[in-house]
Length: 217
Image (cartoon, rainbow, N blue to C red; front, top):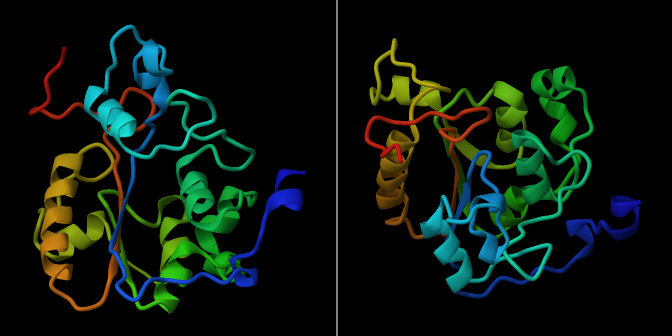
C-alpha cells in the first residue's frame, strides 16, 4: 500500500523556484551503500571502507532510515540500478518486465519526473555514464524526460576513446569524472541553470573493477 497511500503526483503540487536558480549535480554511486561505513556510524565495518564519503555524510545533510547513516529504506521495484534511478527521480517503483522497458520507450511517457520539472523551469539536464545507455532502458527513460545523454558510444564518437576500447562496463570511472569536469567547465558558462547527473560503474556487483591507479589495501 506504500505508493497507493503516500504517492503524490508532482502535477498536483505547486513547486516554486527562486529567481536565482541553483545548479544541480546528482551522482548515482553504483552498488554503494551505508553498510560500508564504520559500525560507530551505522555500517558493518570496524573501520570505514569509504571514510571520505562517510565524513561528507556526517558534515552535511543526509537522509537515513535510522538515527545513524542508514541510507534509504528500499521498497519493492527500486532495488537495482535503473529502478533506483527511476525511484529517485520520479518517486515510483519499476514494475515492468525487463524486455518491456528496454525496448519500448513509450512506457515512460505518462509520468512527471525531476527532468520534466527542471525543464519547465529553464534547466538543461545532462546524463553522463561510461556504459551503454541503452542497457536497462536508461536511454528510454532519461531521453523521454529532457536529458541529453553522453555514454560509452558518445565517447567513441567524440574521439575521447578508441573504437576498440572497452574496460569493465565501457570506460572507467576515472575517465567518467574527467569527462564530467570537462562538461561542467563548458555548461557552467551558459546563462541557463543546469542539472548534471552522473552514474558510476566501477563498484558494480559482484566484485567491482579496481583501476590501476587505486590502492589495494
